[in-house]
Length: 154
Length: 183
Image (cartoon, rainbow over all chains, first blue to last red):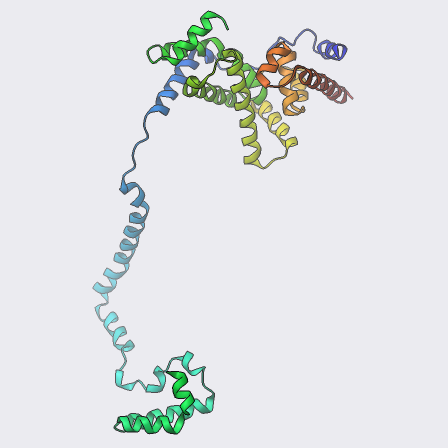
């Protein structure tokens, strides 16, 4: 091994003490001072962050949203005052014009076959037009449901 | 451990003289520690950061120093560990394999404005970079710093026999690398 080591030394002459690496001028002279400054900085207790620090992003977003709304809403309101009202008038519907069929939820409809559904709708229209008493209800249930259905559903 | 070192340690652990003792400690070992770190990480800026981290660790943990080894051994052990941790971090961050750590070091060497060696010296450094981590450290400590195996054993917590074997393999590999380069 000694021979191998000597081979390496021979290749580089007697230069292993030559330091190819350098440092910036005055590096070691100023190192201790720089180190003490860093230690002082690290030992200072961290600044406590206020609630505003954490809410800042949310507040900024809300402010930008409000600003954009202001830019859009105010000119529309000022320059086209009738546009908004006209739109609402167009969108408003007469409550009386809504047919009872149209308010039946789609999910409910899916439980029935087409025939059952049409039958139920026609009965609903009949019931709606007539005065409706407890006797009518009892008759309707007796005609359409068995005792088992009534007990099972209760 | 001589009396002056014992006094220095006592002062480092006392509240009154701590800062003065710490400055003495920095001045005493900064040069040797720096060059030890620099040969592991190659680049001056990295070596500077690591050296500062070593002393900050010493400043924070001097009370837990058990004095079962010399200050020199303790400092060198921290410096070696910090340097190796730094290289591991680089490896994790860049998701590179062990071979590419040597690429990283070669790049560091090439880009380091504070490397002023000639082509021959650069070749030797590039050969050393190719060595596995532990062999590289052993090679530097033995070949350049001419450190005793017993001292190295205390710092690296490795038996003298294992260190001799590491150095032997390292020297062989460096020689082979240089032969290949000449072809």
